[in-house]
Length: 79
Image (cartoon, rainbow, N blue to C red):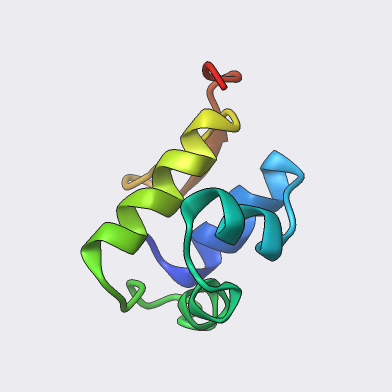
């Protein structure tokens, strides 16, 4: 699972606001806010919500890496 900091960094790299990611992932913005507040710990939440967020960020051209833990640009996916 990604950490809260990874989600926040990926969102920033994609140039998206929390509300934009939440809307595209079809989750409540407060849910994303809580996940990002996990900081260096793996995010807590429903697996489907985490998967939706990761997919939104991937489509925006950003992916999370495990070793080292971080984010990187991969190019824009198909809308």
